[in-house]
Amino acid sequence: MHVIVRMSNGSDARDLAALRWQSRTDGERSLESYGSFVARFCNWYADALISECWFAAVAAVEEALVGCMYLRCVDTVPVPGVARRAWGYVTHAFVSEGHRNSGIGQQLLALLIKRGQILGLKELQVWPSRGAVSLYVRAGFQSPEEQRSAMAPDEASYVLPLAGLQL
Ligand SMILES: CC(C)(COP(=O)(O)OP(=O)(O)OC[C@H]1O[C@@H](n2cnc3c(N)ncnc32)[C@H](O)[C@@H]1OP(=O)(O)O)[C@@H](O)C(=O)NCCC(=O)NCCS
Image (tube, rainbow, N blue to C red; front, side, top):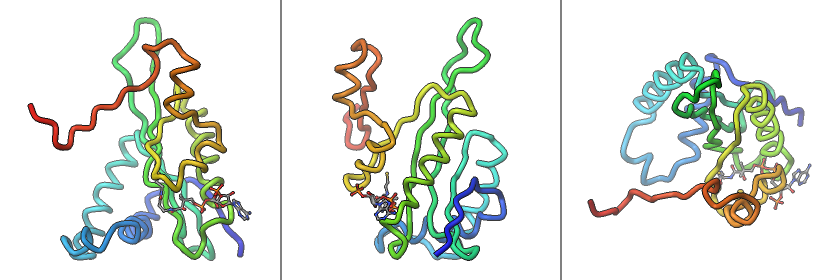
């Protein structure tokens, strides 16, 4: 099996929509038709690419996409004397079931890490699913506990889950 891992371009939109659809639950899929989702996804992806804030790495086997991983750049409020400061959020890592455990996830992540370096991002953050933690740890991501023990307390990230929060 020959796998090509590369940065995505606009021509991948429909295949990326299919991977996104595949990655969601039956319950979510029952809420919208496939055609409507693909159209909405393709509009979103076209805007995402133009924004230059979103990047996707993709894995292809015989031209069919079998995996993807996204990077969202997040700018900080401008800092005097610094042209740009931004960090990256890694999201929607997905490899279709028959192609897992052969290193595709690792290659997708390596490509996004390289892109993050090229973009001059300060750091990458991810909120991994339980099964994906080892993928990120192997690439050098630190757990919140490791960050807190290594850095000044005001540098570690604190997350406020908004679902269910009473205002
Ligand atoms: C998480 C996910 C993207 C990983 O993709 P993947 O292509 O299977 O990842 P890799 O193959 O690089 O690594 C997975 C395992 O295969 C092993 N592996 C890597 N290369 C290998 C090779 N050449 N031969 C055999 N095993 C290999 C790795 O050691 C790793 O095992 P471990 O995590 O238990 O240590 C994929 O499992 C997936 O889509 N899961 C469902 C969605 C999900 O949970 N996404 C994460 C959201 S953050």
